[in-house]
Length: 371
Image 1 (cartoon, rainbow, N blue to C red):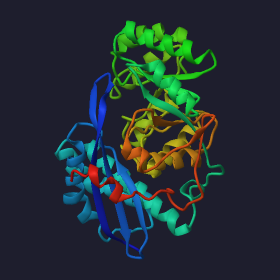
Image 2 (cartoon, helix red, strand yellow):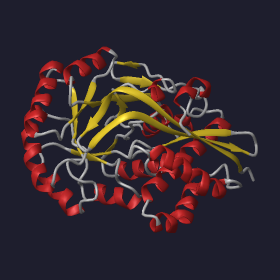
Image 3 (cartoon, rainbow, N blue to C red):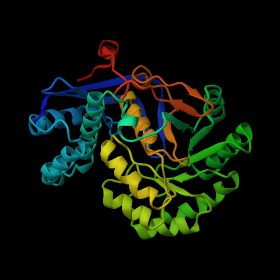
Image 4 (cartoon, rainbow, N blue to C red):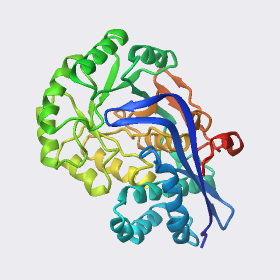
């Protein structure tokens, strides 16, 4: 049996000139946690752990990897991504509950799953999208993270780069939100696809009013209008009252949570994050269930280049005209230097290079190393 023989965990922080703001806070730098798994047959693969929040999250996740996950993973099967992810969830469940940190544990398991799938596709000498059963390397993308400042300037710059869909951050007050969305609609035109992301900013009572104020500008979806852990009944009430389709998923953890939101017809767009829960295996599981309910899968990603590449392969493997991939519009060398992206008329193309199709240049990233 081929087994895991070594695990490397690389932690980076890249400085940025302008903090990246959203409704609940701001990022003052861009972190990333990259995992490299090596196997007894010489194969290897890369994955990325979500580490945007809190500000010390990246270093903390590395310590969890080194102290807890490395001993479990060494000697584990290197050719069964879904099985290994299930094993990790079983073996770490009690510890995650005991320390009150199910999120970081799930994030690390998701990155390990990404790396195992990268390894599997490299062994098969196939790009991951094809290895997973995809039929086309084309991925529809949208420019994300726009706002609350310079929204028109940023959107027009991304349009020049080839983007045809754009997502605005709201939750900064009704007047500012409407002004920003109105300005975007006027600048981009009636036919532009504009999504809106509230980042859990509103209460269930306020959400209905806020959504009604934004509806005349015809957003493609309203993302996370309320807290992700509000009961399904609250989400159902908001969805029923909303003239805008709802999207969510980056803060849903576990297959049961996704099934509940899909089965109860709360979401028209579901957004699993390969670095927060489930990795590629979980994303494919969500996609299969979503397809049975005519719900589009539009993975969330707002971090480094490895997770972006994994998310792109997931979208290409899923297929489906309703799917979009999120691409951060804000500067991040840990994305741009690892997985440079060219967009033409709203489409990015994956290559036929085996696995994720990328190889991080660790020497180039050395100046960002923090752990």
